[in-house]
Length: 102
Image 1: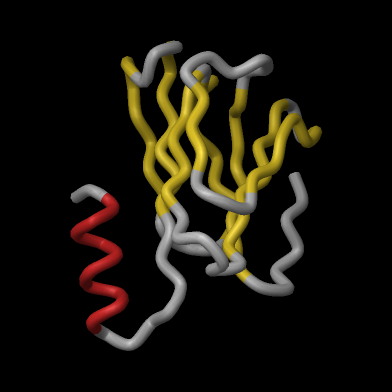
Image 2 (image 1 turned 60 degrees about the horizontal axis):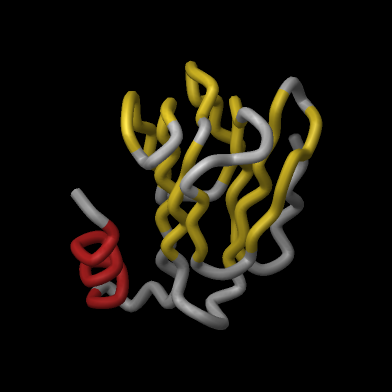
């Protein structure tokens, strides 16, 4: 299920926050894939080398990228990275005042 389907279902249900982070084991958005649409810390089970973050402007949702329990990046608006400068093995996601720690 892609972001447009998820966003439509959430917005139809009255939920104003809708985001999706998709991470890939290979550069160029290929290889093994992990996708998350809910707040929390998420272990990938592999090292990601590219990602896509779908988040409507102004929704207050962010993602922190982590590797070996250390932060390696942060985004609070939709973005993508064809080739990450660091591997990623965990993401912390949330909206509003949610604390995003590795």
